[in-house]
Image: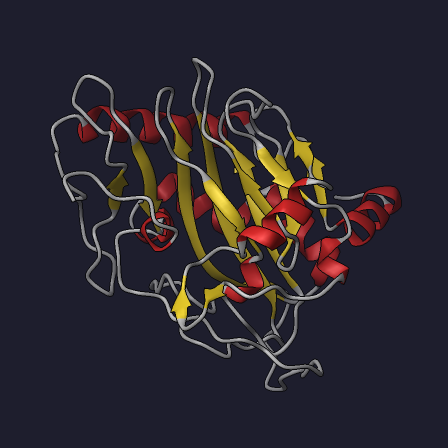
Length: 289
């Protein structure tokens, strides 16, 4: 699925945008579901929906949410319940692209939808995904599928090329887990960041240790991402899944491994509170809090 040049770019920069990650029919089905959820959220003042397997609300909205101007920002593990998202998580071209990078043996860890609707205040503080989901090795790819065009104006991902080959940065302030890097580190990251943009149906394949964040949507069109995390089958969690789901460990390509591959180093373990989404961990309140 990926050319040699694309794979080289991924390992050099820590990310790659590849087009045609899903079929037009797959994209249309996911977008139809999401449009329905945005409309449904107008009828709710607090996070709601069929609970996840650890009891959290499926749908989370920002504190600015109103019926007139919804601020739906997170759908937790949609592949658990919704066929269109389950299909893409298991069988789309996106998964074959991931296998090109860390395969041939690949398993699923968790998924979510992050949405930035026009007028919402949702931001993503700078972090590295591996700090949330530490494993025995870092052959882990976060696949961010663009359900709409991702542009500079609607809150695109900002990444720091090459940061996946650098150090891991703490997400603690003293003893408190903040879920984002310290202010001093963020200044250094932003000095090197580049925008990551692309059309609907493309995927940003991101190394688990890439430093990244994003700003609020300042445009008149949404920025929704379907985010699936995949690991090599010989990468095993060192900490509980921050988003437990009924498909965790599902083999999506190749064969399982009974051997864990260990990478040398010291790993800081997260301390995540049980809340509707990681946005609250980073200090952004949910609706009606």
